[in-house]
Image (cartoon, rainbow, N blue to C red; front, side, top):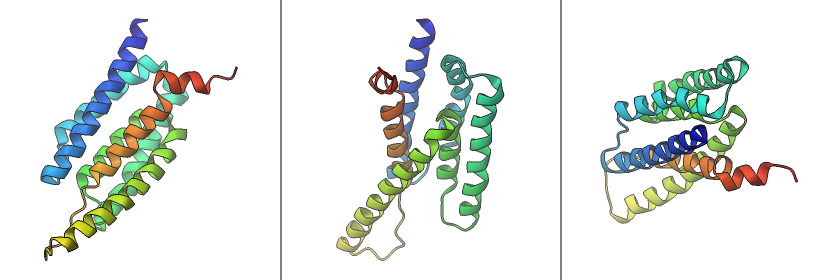
Length: 163
């Protein structure tokens, strides 16, 4: 029972951190390193509360996070993604099961497309001449919250159990 309470408490903390990341990205176009570090430091406790084995479960989480970091760092080097966005997606990979991480990426991409259209329209309507800056942390947070709601809430867990 205590493990379940800790597990859902950690998921709530992650959801709050994602909302905070989205709001700071909207206001300052920045996702703080301390927030990414806090999310990363919570992952081992989440693994424990989820009952993950060191091998292969935790190793897979770390492998997906490393692969995500390498690919996203390449996008950062090409100036296609911000550093805070790279770090936020990498630390989310520590929390989200590998088979669900692809779902997070798809939802994030769809939300990012909608966000880009809305921000572009807003930018044109205000006749701003500076470069359009998309707070992509909003799309990442939306994807993360979607995955949490769809895969980690008690109702989602009960729906996944065959009758």
